[in-house]
Image 1 (spheres, protein in one colour):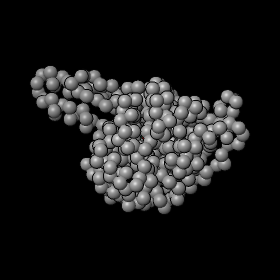
Image 2: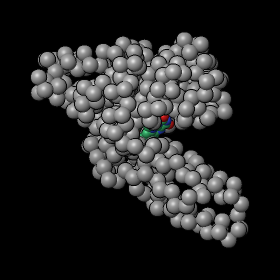
Image 3: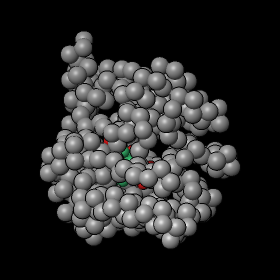
Image 4: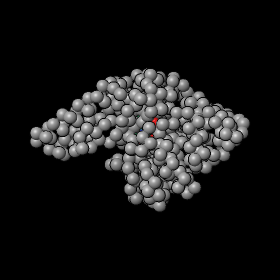
Length: 352
Ligand SMILES: Cc1cc2nc3c(=O)[nH]c(=O)nc-3n(C[C@H](O)[C@H](O)[C@H](O)COP(=O)(O)O)c2cc1C
């Protein structure tokens, strides 16, 4: 299922008045990203690498490399390999707590990456300065209205508003509520992309009408032909329904868990048992608090790679959003984007 060597070509934009309206609503987004359709491929660790990212950009969307825990050398290679596969713009997603964040930012600058997405908490001022100083546009996640305002003040160029329907690490609030809180207040001041739970074009049309300049999708792209995700990972997505994509649950208030939405599997069940076991050891005083918290924090280390790359979907983490129920088959990125755009245009057309 490797996407190596596959080049997706952009499809013609849908025609008709709905399509015209769609292009109009996406204009700020496409101008900002420098691509044809304001659909960003959300960075997904291990999945959003050279093949999928270049395919998304070649299909007219905006691919984003997931740097995750990559070293600066690995990111350097990944960007270079992506550039060999596309001449279109793409971005890089960096995690703020990466120990080599500055070096990663400089690698992006050396490759003249135009857009950096900073994930994993509020971006530190130093990183913002460095990115902007290098001339790149900075995109950050706004998990609440107050933070959206703060990010705008600190010089961020665009926001992603991502709700808890999304796959991967999630906050507590749904996309629909965040969109209602943030779009009316911020949409005119700064480009806002909406993410989380978007599986069809009708939803894209609705968020654009609310003021978003575009969207970010992840789950819908995992089973793209060009995605290198293991066959087992893709099969699990195709079989799953929305209710199978559940957040990891914290069992004990002393042992913090950052919720991750993933498909139910054996390891999700084991995680609850592990938390109970560690809490028990804490109660008995046979383990220190710091050590107990570390055991929980490290529990999922390597789990996403195990599932995505090795295909071990029972002991790995099969991160997926609730839109997984709308993933029906493996198909080229260009077809996925064309379908979403057609649905969005048709929805706008009926609104007149
Ligand atoms: C398998 C998987 C891995 C992900 N890894 C990351 C990541 O490394 N960094 C990040 O910022 N977001 C990550 N995400 C979130 C996506 O970038 C995107 O925002 C999200 O998937 C959008 O919601 P949707 O899944 O409902 O489309 C991941 C999502 C999935 C499904």
